[in-house]
Length: 613
Image 1 (cartoon, rainbow, N blue to C red):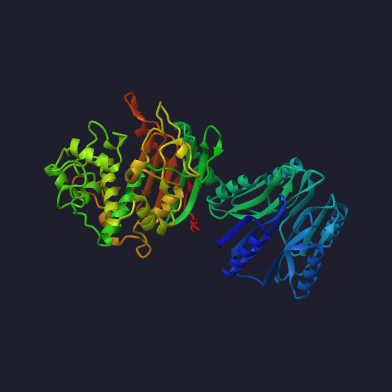
Image 2 (image 1 turned 30 degrees about the horizontal axis):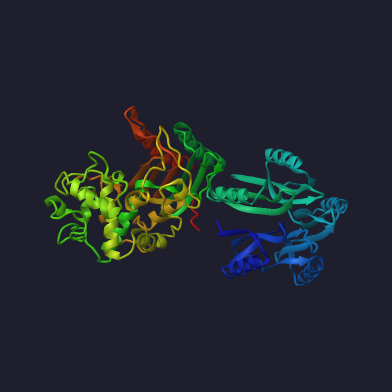
């Protein structure tokens, strides 16, 4: 589909700035809506990057200026294709789009009363003209109409005006059942009552959706929800009501039909229902292009705030591939080697941590051992990262070296170790002279465009902007952990979409654009000698498929890179833990993976477009 962009809630100056910038980029304005928001005129527009006849647009015109502009442009061969009008304290303001496309005949009129509009409508229909645009507005406490007709062939169409919300919904439902698609919706308020004028056309469509009577936050949610399922905004209208600014809009799908989208959603909801999941966010990419994203449920049960694709969640151990990528980039830059040892007089840290002299196995530990979980550290009797809560990184590493001597020769056994990745975070700090988080943001996440990613806070009060609330199950407390101390092994917070932004910079499918060379991607994702399914920060199968998952109280996450070029990321804001009564988390995680694959399968052939923007 042609690239497109949309804006709303812009004042006149901001709209002009957007207009100028987008026009310079080859975008043409195809829809415009003016409306009052509080005491300020606002504008919304849709732009499409496409060729076509010469065009012009204006906004913020008084009735007299609109008539003058209309007359001048008509004399130059332009005809209006969109018109918007709305009441302001200074009088009615107009905006419009004109172009030089050719039709047999056209007419346009504004300032019509309801009776005048009905008479004109009847006359034009009898003369073989069809309505192509309609705008209702208030002027002096009376409803007025601006409309455009043209004489050109078209499928069957119907139009109505002066409908209240219930009447409009009834017509919407009736016409949808007859195969009509709404083309133009105009909302307006007269005498304290909100009315609608609308135009429908009967035609085939693989899928569309329309909304009206929604406020600005709900419109933004609806916009995101539709956009990331592959819908394109076809028309929108803002309008003042006694309840505040509201919006009406129509979207049409560009690839996935309604049945496939419903099947994908049902697969996700089945998982949510099975495991009592408040909110789920999922994103899918193909060939480095974002082709689908969906957020279902709520960000917080107490408020029932809807979850959106903009929300971010703790990704737990999916933080490890991010740390691994940072290490591999430093290797690529010649700033370290995988065989670089960490502890002892010749190690990267020297005698910085704990009490030297170090154990023989401790002196053998190198970067690769930490990346592959083969440094010899174990979680017996407990995971060091969940012990000694009063200790900072340095003190914790010293305590572990003094009290948790590696149980095996480094490189010989693979034992999953959060602590090893904690040490890798400190290695990054030692080499770069920056905090771990700052270096990763600058070197890895910024080039990927993953701007939502940050190290999370420990408590509910430290929740980040747009971060969900986590919900424990079976007595777990999601806010009784040192998330900031987990930084390099489990501390990142992200949206599902930004996880795929990160993935496409390290997935090896586009070497010129990737952060890592093909050789380093291969090295990062080759299984180690101790376990061929464990690579450097990734789980691998030797067939080109990589993945990592994460789990903490209140959180499950998964990130997958498939050999066929498909990337998948999913996040939820709860989990069921493993307990003495059963391996609930393991079962949930297995179904989590299967759900992600099922959603992808339900979508069928993935779209050719890119929603990363």
